[in-house]
Amino acid sequence: MLVSVRSGAVWSLEEAVAIMSNSQLGTELSGEEIAAITAFLETLTGEIPEVTYPELPPNTAETPKPETMQRPRSAEAE
Image (cartoon, rainbow, N blue to C red; front, top):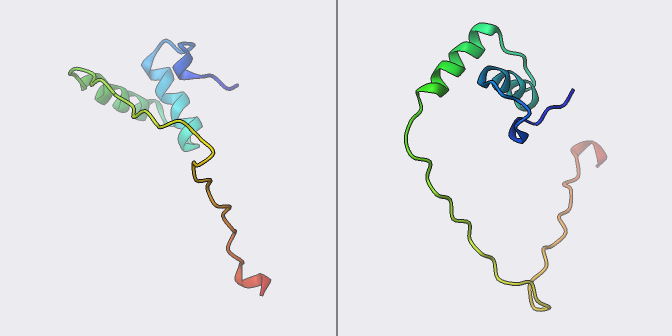
């Protein structure tokens, strides 16, 4: 079952750590590992910095288009 942690569907940090380790690392953590990571995360304090994203210029007819990348040929194909 796929659960999005960012959607608010998960309410405990322990459950979020377990889900994220599985979905992002492809591994299941032990209860001890989950507890250690959760304990560490709970020590983090401070103000959350404001993030300002750059504003890109509008896309026009003069905007350069990216070049199509070519896959390198493997040695086996030669």
